[in-house]
Image (cartoon, rainbow, N blue to C red; front, side, top):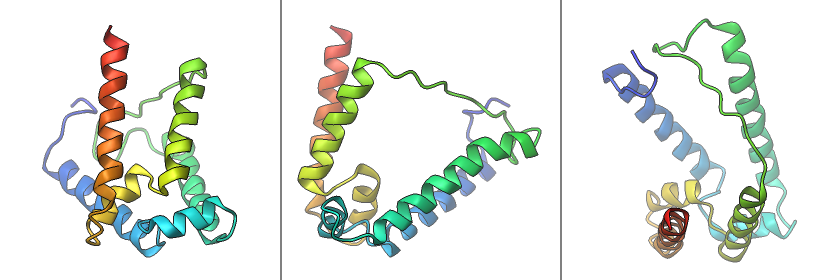
Length: 141
C-alpha cells in the first residue's frame, strides 16, 4: 500500500487526529485572534508553552517514530522531506509572518476557529486562498 492511499482505518485516525488538534487549538485559545496578537506582542506567554509543547511532540514524532517502528502503524512507509532554505522560502515566511502579525490569524487555528462560530476569520482564510492562488499563477508563468 502506498503512503498516500486512504483506507477506512487511516481515514478514521486522520479524522480523530484532526478533531484532537482542533480541540487542542481551541482549548489553548489559539482560535482567538486577540490572544494570538497578545502573544505576538509579548504580552501573553501562555501560547509560548503551547507552541513549545507542539514543537517538542513534532520533533519526537518525526525523529523518534522512524527509529522505533519499522513502518507507520497503519502501513505505508516513513517519508522524509529535506528542507532547502532559499530566497522563496525566506520571502514566503516573511509574508506569512506579516499577515499573521497583522491579523492574529494562523491558518490552522483559523479553521478550528470556524468550529467555535467565529466567522470573522473567513476574511483571513479568503486572503490565504487568494495568496495561494496568486503564488500558483506566478509560479506557472
